[in-house]
Length: 223
Image 1 (tube, helix red, strand yellow):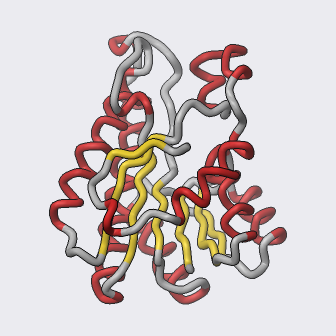
Image 2 (cartoon, rainbow, N blue to C red; image 1 turned 45 degrees about the vertical axis):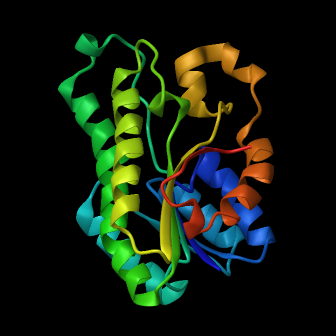
């Protein structure tokens, strides 16, 4: 299969790449870190990686066009790209930081969906996995922007699931609590007590690949 993956240069996205490739799939990945994109291209020459800012419609359009030619149209789209705010009370978070977060975490998902769903409709098949969070189903102080964005992903996914035909599905996937740079930013050393991204990907990759349109609309949590 051909799997398109956003946010492939670090965290959960970076950990998923080798797990997907080892299972025989072609990955078309994008991220903002051009140095890491080049490293991925060198390590996985049979896949396609491109620098892309998902919050920018033009950048997404370029990625979609290039990935379609170089890797093939997607059987799976994994919308993983996201950032978290610097922990603080909501009223202390600048408009600039709030806007950047929602532009990536919400608009970025919508930008990919806008371009990918027509491809899946044409191919009469496909799965869209939108990475959510425990903070998309509950809340904590000092991460209000991130909570808002992931609650939005849950609602966006539910609405999209009602619009898709039976041969295409979408799910919101809570990956669980994983020790990534984002969690360390929020929890500090406490994050070290949780499994890392590579350990998570070993079980998450087959779980994701096992999803089908029969799962459409389900709010799921990775094992």
